Length: 65
Image (tube, rainbow, N blue to C red):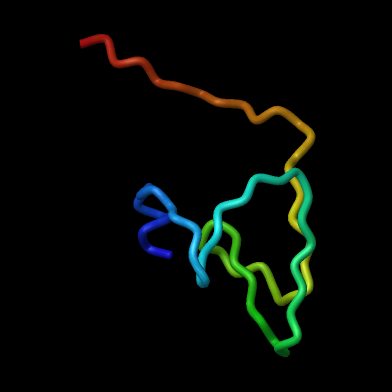
């Protein structure tokens, strides 16, 4: 996981896989599987992750040096 946060290229393997989706439901047969989004605890599985429909506002500061 630390490689993902550092921006390293991901190769699919038995333990990690890179996918693109708009909506994904994740379930588990194991009880009490914790879920984190961007490092923040969000609860337990099952969960549904969905892309926001709204555009995100981006503010960029310009350095005039």
